[in-house]
Image 1 (cartoon, rainbow, N blue to C red):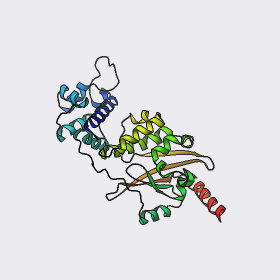
Image 2: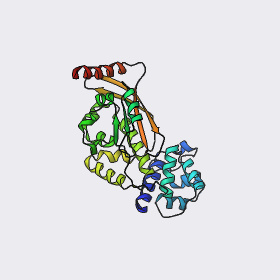
Image 3: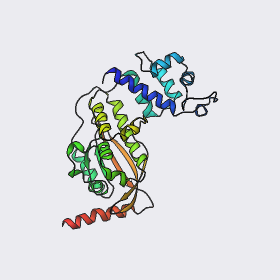
Image 4: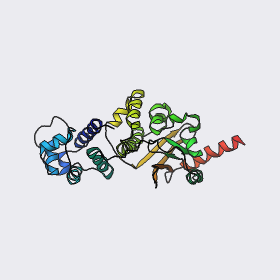
Length: 282
């Protein structure tokens, strides 16, 4: 990714994060009428211990040098999370993964076995581009039969923004989809050397402009807490807690497990869905 694109991403990110904070959030008095919500540039500069001019240049995406110490001060001023802080450092320094190799497309036999052992817990495996490269029977029954999708369309975000049935399925649609967009942005920052990400963002924005409204929030998280409520066509109300597991190694593989929420009948409903299909195919 070239520097102008990276610096524009930095500019957008800083402005968005600044806009999320109010003076009382950071211990500053509210003074004067504000044209736009959020902190002013001079307030962020004050909190970070830098000059307003220097911070303005940084937020404008100018080509200036910046030290890790100052970036940490800015991250503190903006109350950034761990993932957001990492994202800031990547954008400000350009020290991202430069590998242009394709992401992993195969699931090891060990991971495949883990998926199958999660009999009634919907689970799938995704790569650093959010492509779904493995799943179990429960996931196919609760979400969608991934086998029926062309390989190039087995992407979490692509499915969420192009398959209308998912918007009907998820009751808490906005929270559900924001979590996955935040995960995608964490990869986007880490692998800015891969032009695939810019191409994908452009493509999905053209197919469904609603994507941009979520993308512009600039939310970043490698593993957001997600509670999911589905209204399944056959099973009815289903409640899940999402656990996202990063597989150690160099392949950037993630296992997403949807655990039926405690105190609900969700697991019983999944068992009926899976067992019904087994009996039907005997």
